[in-house]
Image 1 (cartoon, one colour):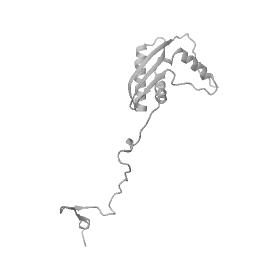
Image 2: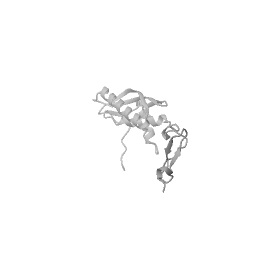
Image 3: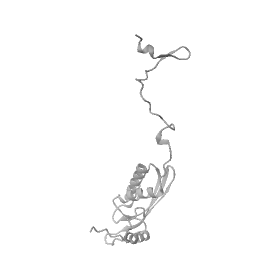
Image 4: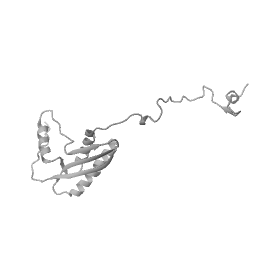
Length: 165
């Protein structure tokens, strides 16, 4: 009887011998088509509006931010929101420039009276950068914040809260 090792020994060029696994013992190798890592095949593009929504929601999450946008844009937005079928715009007060790997953002915010504007701006920057970098995978090179107004406690809201019916 022949030894299994002897059966599977082949003569390599130059006189050296190699031992190969018998066909029944070989593991099936996955077939690679196209070559390279699958994650590097193709391109992903992210629309400006996607980054605007992420940034708008992240900025609104910060305590001390009353609203985003200037007085005029909030007024038009409030009218648009009252139209049947209209939805609240989360991108109001947010402008972005999106490149292939980087983005820059401009935010216009209204802060609550009594809060530290510099603390709110710092918190907004941190929250927006973390959200955009985590969700979109883009490097945020700058977040410019313009405080356009202060919401006083006795001022009536331009955008009344939606009542549940």
